[in-house]
Image (cartoon, rainbow, N blue to C red):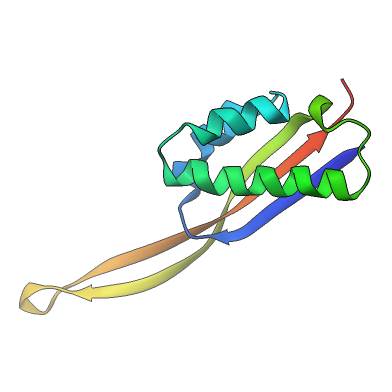
Length: 111
């Protein structure tokens, strides 16, 4: 059985979160949670929240043993980009791109 959780429109670029998503992919869920807990990055906090939500979904849907769950998929996709303009000297303007991302975590109890 698969248990999913997602965080859409996360306020961070996908490029900053992806290394941590690859770090927890394929690991047991409790080990991945401990791994993320000791990393000092904001992207690790976002992934940790989604992983906790997936564990909560598994518990709510009646998973037999939560300790046996494995992170089957941890995917970070690009979200929309908010485009703004920052006025600069001599009438020029610099573009500002505010990037968002979609985080998806899937847990599975099959080996």
